[in-house]
Image (cartoon, rainbow, N blue to C red):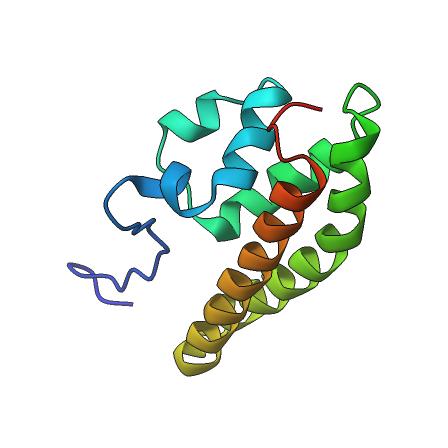
Length: 123
């Protein structure tokens, strides 16, 4: 490594107008309902949000309606995130990009199911 320079590869959140809340209304409703509204106020990547969803799925205080959907989707989210982590650490950027696209698709599927199972946004 250079003494005066370094390479930095990091993931940063980039959402359309309206941010995460507008793009993922089901996930936003879930986070509000389980008391994690603070996550909606701070910029967080989908990659980093996987861990919060995993914790939420294991939380005994979370409604069974939310858990039903989370238990279906969290394993594939965690698997994709873990593969992305490996690609990031190995600096395999092309593979990382493909995995991040896949993670977005998985979040879209999760969001759709959350809106279907809990249309009111409150479980």
